[in-house]
Amino acid sequence: MLRFDIAPVDSNAYRLVATVSFSVAALYLFTSFQWASLILAVGGFIRGFISPHKCPSYKLFETIMARLGRVKKVNAGSKMFADKIAAVAGTVMVVTWLMGSSIGTIPAIAILIFAFLDLSTGFCAACWAYAAWYRFHSA
Image (cartoon, rainbow, N blue to C red; front, side):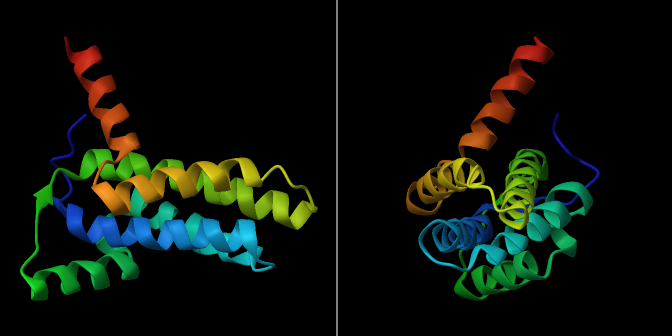
């Protein structure tokens, strides 16, 4: 459902968020810095379950895009849905890392792929799924 209770968000700032998500997933998969998945879990939780406007990284990226004159406001609902998925994936990555399990590579690979799609093309798969779900259930 569209979120009118939360101010619109900048989709270009979210592309920078996707860059951070991609970097965290790459660190998790290809280095020993698997603790970086905490960044994904905490950031996704703040943006997805509280408000993007309360997240320090989003506020920084929004400011950067505003100074560059590249603001493109969109409804917050689909982006918050994507962040909820990132929070769950990040939490799975953290928990499995702490347990010494390699199962966290599954959500890390998914984040790596989908974050790359978003940062390189602007296509947010979770946003697309959210919009499709909304259209299906409102018809």
